[in-house]
Length: 83
Image (cartoon, rainbow, N blue to C red; front, side, top):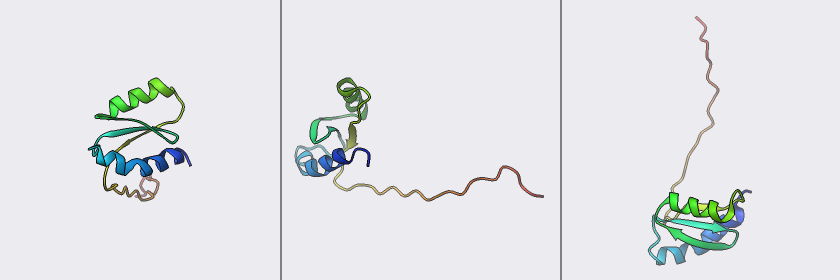
């Protein structure tokens, strides 16, 4: 799975980030390293690209409770209707 190690690092470092008043900020993670926490997504992603180029890294917003995303499978649209 893509970014599996980074997601594991996020989960392990979450209590530490929350204790440092990181709620709502953005973590920059590469492998098992929490590199820094940023106030904006733009700052975090910019730093990630500056350090790692096109190598995979994770920028994730820090939340006490993760919001669940629900996406259902959509059926293809029919462009022509029978009349």
